[in-house]
Amino acid sequence: MTTQQTYDARKFPICAPHNGEKGEPYTRRFRNDFIQNLWDEADEFSSVAEHALQTDDGSPANPIPAGAGGAGNPNQKRRRAYTKRSNKLFKLLRQHVTDVTFRAAIDQPGVSGNGLAALAIADQWYGNSTNNLRLELQNQEWSSASIAKIGSDEGTIRRLYAHLRQINGERQAGEIHSDNALALRLLSCIIHPVVDIYREHFPNN
Image (cartoon, rainbow, N blue to C red; front, side):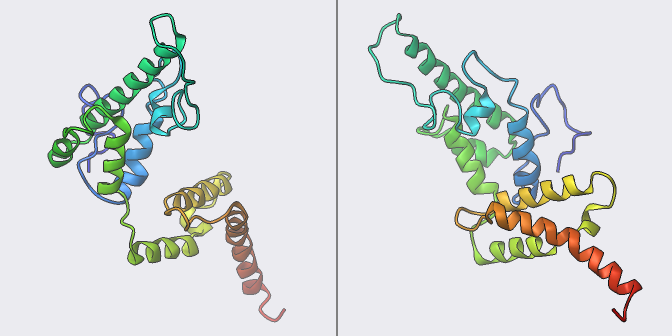
């Protein structure tokens, strides 16, 4: 796996490239780094990061109203900007995923130039598989989260919460824990070590 220290930033200006590894190298490193570093790639309406997250101007969440065509229609400019963001997302994703098989797949008609379609293929190819083993491993990781694994210092609670949010966000739709469950899991990680220390020092109580 290419590290932040070994890649050529001139060739890969957004982040370290992805070589086709499946699972965490994609879901926890490349995908997060890639999208987070796209916020500066922006036009007057939205950023490429927002396009990848489908929250930009022209996305289903923020549709551009239908109107008469023509150069004088401001919505035409917004639609062109949306198309350019899609093209830019496609170009940058293709540039930063070095897997030649993936590049060949997204160069096909219907996908070429469509950033969201290319990103969906990357998610399908390199993301966690949707099977019982994946869910079992995710449940084990959720249940085994602890302060001991995070490290104890002034930033422990913040990092622990971020870790729980991350592993919860990687679950498939329908498997994601609610905000209440997330809060309870965080509290259990904090309370249980305290209880264990108390029992160690006061075994007869």
